[in-house]
Image (cartoon, rainbow, N blue to C red; front, side):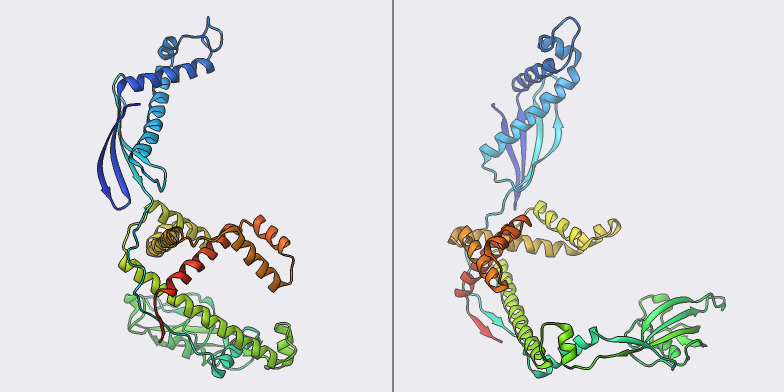
Length: 414
């Protein structure tokens, strides 16, 4: 089919082309559409499929024309992609359609193509690696956090102290000076859940008691209209609970995991923290490298790909419908950075032959199976059923690409 293609704009990965399908080609599509209709519809006096196309067009002209235009557009799309050598990133869009009877079909085709960055500079970057120290103090702090997670809250009949959990009915005066019914809140004092003046008032009450006093709202209160305002506040203290931490002993160690003693738990915590610090430092180096690569090799990415990543974020975080627009705007730079990272990995993996193979995936599965003391075939089947093999292949490819890059860019300890 002889169509006319006139590129009108090529910016980044965006392409706009004016396309014209000649009238005689459109007429042939009308014949094709009429034959299809003749095979489907029943016309009195003719056996199914035997009505002449001219009669079909006369009786179903509008529908035949619409189908012919759709056929012409689809074939034109295919020819444009082929003749222009477009590597589409997503389905093209059609704009400004003109499709008058007996005339050419004309439209503007908008599409995005796959980015193909040259990546001329991938070496010569200086990277700093800083690993968080894991000493005795850090391990002890982590053990305290573990104790906090196992803490119990015990009711007390005393005035609350910082760190206590309280249930209160709070009411602050209206502009006319009246005090409404109190609203119930559960607070951990000293946690910043209430302004300091309100917490001080809470700590003056006994469980079951009520106190009232003027409270001044802080000058940096989020609601500007309330800043510096003094209002009468009433606090009814319903209950007080005090945190009780379990002792750091062998019993706690056995409760938390497969540990014979608290010493064994401490050793495992120290090892896990060191491994986590190592992974965090490695991830930070990779992030530095990614930043340097993008600065040295800027390129655009398809908006359709960014939208796909944003959609996955929306599903992952279960964002309510009313908050999706705000969330998408806030997280768009992160989604764009993720797409660019993926493109960089793909380009280098292909250019340098670093893509993970099926054998690499098998080897990683065998390694994981050995660590878990399970059968490799069974683990492979589980991952295959869960659809995670492609993800594993992607992770292995990323590992190989970043290893290749780090061999060529110096990393110094910060």
